[in-house]
Length: 311
Ligand SMILES: [Zn+2]
Image 1 (spheres, rainbow, N blue to C red):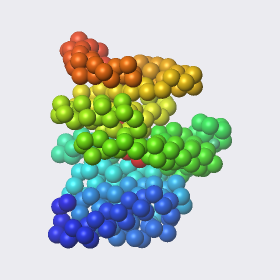
Image 2: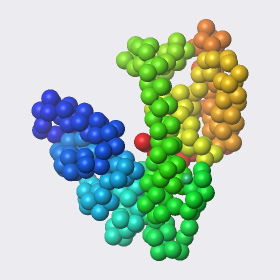
Image 3: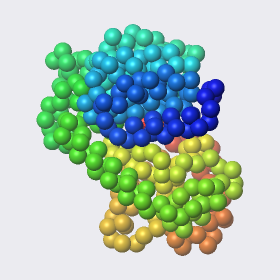
């Protein structure tokens, strides 16, 4: 927390921003605009992210852009900038008055790299949205083929990194939310470092990583591999390594596992696969596998990860 607000008020605003980010209610825009001006960077970041999500749910693009642009271009906190830039992109052509400033941000060596990348990505999507609006570009929905409008293009690019019409956007959104809810409900096993995971295997891996001081993200964001969304069990950002724990052996699960493994392979990602039989020798195995991946010749063959899209 980096503000003078008292803890309780800060906590309430954080919870409120998170709740509004999940509510998909465009009438929340004025309240989120107020939260976007709070002294706490954490609250501003959550508010920016929530305003971005509202682009898919009927928020007034002009009002949203007026709220987001100052944060995207001038917030003192780089992460808030990054989230506001991503949110701004979702409003497509409505954000076009800020294109020059966005281009400057993308080229500004004083900005953090992730801010420059977010600005460059916003420029690309907003420019394309303008071309669609002017009739000089056309995109078909990747699910149903219908030609999309510029606002549909921008919000689907922001949310799913795909081109989707509004119908397919809604269906994809609901499917994903149901999936996310199912996953969250099945996370019931507490780990020693205070997380909730889905299985004993994931618990053992989590605790091993924590005990060895290896930074990890557990099941927290979708990544795009081969144009499809993948939700890795673990991602180790400092090593750029993914870990999947393949805990089940039904036929459907096995098929899904093969497809997912292929996607990692085709995308040139470093994946460590672990199975229930590995748990008894997890310590030796993980040490071996991580040492192997850390060898310079294997590291050199692997491209760096693409920019992340936090949802
Ligand atoms: Zn469609």
